[in-house]
Length: 128
Image (cartoon, rainbow, N blue to C red; front, side, top):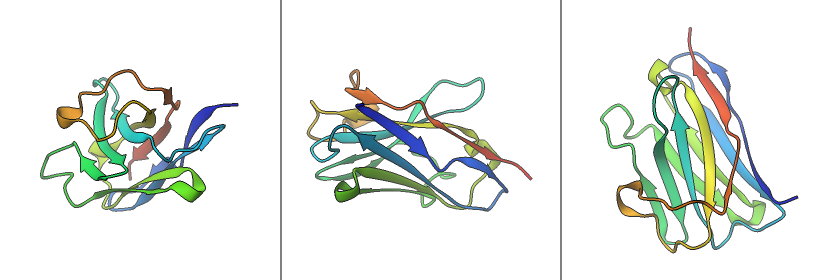
């Protein structure tokens, strides 16, 4: 079965860390641009970060996010990771990933077309 599956979410206290995984099955991630999104309760989905063969892009450009989010990929494991440090209650959201075979680079301003594959997401809840 061809799919993307996210994992690694859960309940974490403020200040904690998580590493989310986006794993493919049925196809190899190499050659795909992979993006992480998040959707907080009552808010629109926003692009968080993106990985291409050429590098990485952080889309959430705010003081509260910079330095806390790190995207990485292991093509041998067909997995892209999103590590979030010093978690804050505002990070509470469903985090999901998507794969884009037609893109060579992460697009400016997170202007993504429809993905080839997308996962269902993993819930991150930051609360004491």
